[in-house]
Image (cartoon, one colour):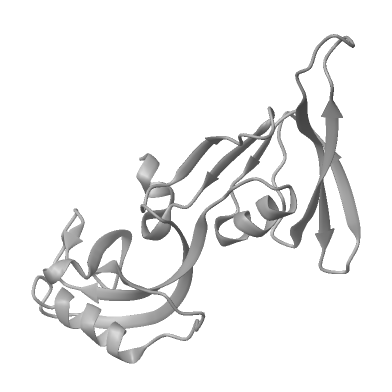
Length: 194
């Protein structure tokens, strides 16, 4: 197999670094590289996986891993709210909510003939992960302007990996020839690439 993915029951513990001082003594170029990733499972058992190239795509956990190898990764966890709703209105496109507070994205399926939508919005700089009922109510009230028969299915809050300019960080890590970053997608997640 030519790639591996860290399983859900594992986390990345560290990266194994190697140094390449060039092919001869006259070369002054110095290029560090990563030769392996060390994972740890729920039982504390560590595994080492060797590879030629590495992509750091761990959301909010990208920065602590990059800090360990001294690679700049300027992302910050920013709280956002998610609400799943249903409506008899069957819209197939994303809806921008009033005042730009968020979006209503139609989901692929229906429940009891009603389309499900995912509301997402707000940017709060707080370590608190608990949902804020005022924020949830604001998203639902904004959605009612377009979807007047909204029923709330569930609601939550999460920390999203935002970069300072709200643009994802994609590309090679400056210090390593075989490490690439793919993080900082904020509230849009991988949908930026679609």
